[in-house]
Amino acid sequence: MPVLGANNDDDREKMTMAFATPVRTSEQSIDRVLRAGLPVVLIFDRHGCPTCQQLDGVIERLAKLFAGRVLLARVDADDNPALVRKYAITALPGLVFVKNGAPVAQTTGAVTEESLRAWLTYLAEGGTQPPLPTGPGTPLKRPVVYPTSDPRATRQEAGERGVSATPVTLNDATFDQIVAHSDQPVLVDFWAPWCGPCRAVAPAVERLAQEFAGRAVVAKLNVDDNPRTAQRFGISSIPALYIFKGGRVVERLIGAQPYPVLRQALARHAGVVAA
Image (cartoon, rainbow, N blue to C red; front, side, top):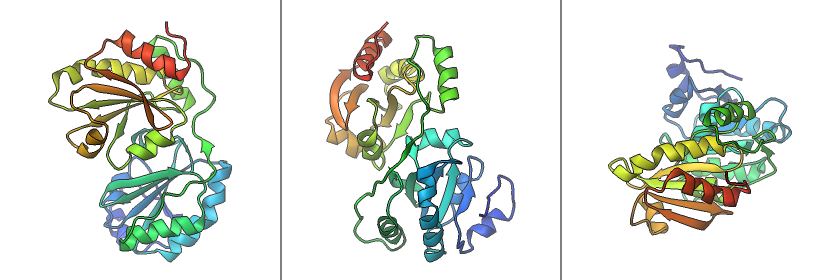
């Protein structure tokens, strides 16, 4: 399998070639992959993952079939935690469909060859977007420990468990895939860069991501860059912090609420005893 390095001068030239096998990319080479001029499917996996192995033959066949039209790139989830956080990967294999350098959808699991082929055809040729496939997956996170109120301890524990201890960045394209498919409560901070109260509440949101890593997902959505999602949920005042379970809003907190209020609300839905 071709491996793209961080400082290989030949990588850009290689990207113009028609790879007939999946490439292996990383945090150092991901920008080259996304600037290759082709649609990309990122496949997050890890060594020894049984559901990832179920997809191996499918990926090899489709890489050959779509050579020169779609680039299939594998990402080792254990070696690339920043990419796992960026794309909010919660189970393996994780599939992120990218066009013109931006994610258009993502899903998880060992999907069928037919459904994955339909998505590659859509990326390569356009037309009607096919249904988003799903399949059996392996949870990314390791067994979790109940969070403590010490941010330094929770940051270290999160790193050891391989879960995100920083807020996940959402956009219009990835909102439903991440929020609706999460098996944990999701706290979404609807914000904007110009908003003073949003900046005031940001440290509390960061702290919640650290403390609840492995028990809940903490995410942020810039309403200026993603007006479709903001309009969908009727966001008229920011910061607005919504808690979702099973893709549905279960609690709304409007304004720059203090950390104890935010923690108590998230703890209720995450099954954690509030301190």
